[in-house]
Length: 185
Image 1: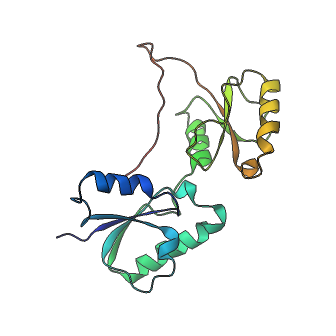
Image 2: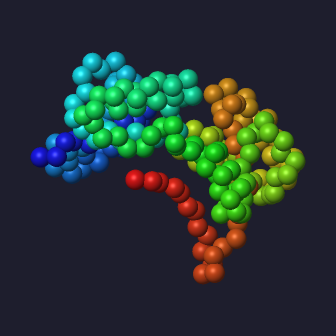
């Protein structure tokens, strides 16, 4: 039997993978498990396995150095295979900004505390580190944006992670609107 795969996630975000494993009636259990980064930080022994670092965008900024240290400790053990080096992961802001600067995306993204004078409307606001979707509908004017940001900044946990994203609202040649995501396996 091949070494198992351990998918590491931020504490509290393991349920989707656990549900997947359960749905397969235990067939995946010998091969696939899920654990939190935090639960592995204090381990003394490391079983041979493939460790997949996932959902790095959900790791609180104050814990990222610990996750990188965990990667280094696992790599130093010599008996593991590692996937998705957290040093190389581009989070939402970095990825979207890079795609815009390379001319791949025709829309830009801004941190809410940046100069917002160049924003093209419509736009929407979301939080950088969650998967909760946009925190606003489409905003069509600077005044709507300012009102939304004032309201969202009242939520202390969101204040430092608000992103304003221009919305490219052109349908494809077939008339359909598309939303793309990025995943590298």
